[in-house]
Length: 192
Image (cartoon, rainbow, N blue to C red):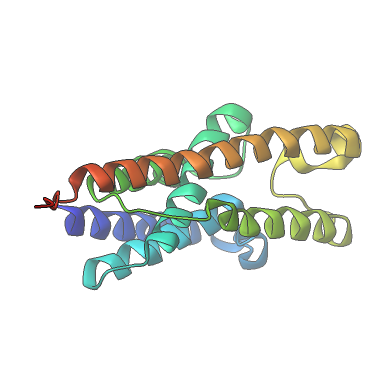
């Protein structure tokens, strides 16, 4: 079951990305496209899912992938719903809703013990630093909530802190749930 689910994740992300390239045509900008956390989290999820079809993937790596895609699944409805992010409906639905749900379901069906969920925070921190440094240089920000031209750096700081709280809570929730479910599913060795 989990192998089929993982292959579905990979194929859905691949189809959404190909769809984006085709539909956007000349408007598709690869460097800006890779500037979206949504795209990066989905690519990470797709790679981890595909690897998981063929061999075991480290619990730490799987946990990180679940964290990043779950962040996408939560931040979109909280901060981006109703905002035109230039994503056609099919890709929008797959990348912001379907893949996050499927990755969380995979984590629940095949839980794993993890440690040090705080290490998973390095990628989101690097992402926001890169975004805020690159933005003024190229005059483009992937999301309105990180664009200081619209709300100043104070507004961006508040938004980043809200997202940071979400990510930290999610990181520890993913780790805790995975560990608890893995312990429950482990065979009990009797002492005796």
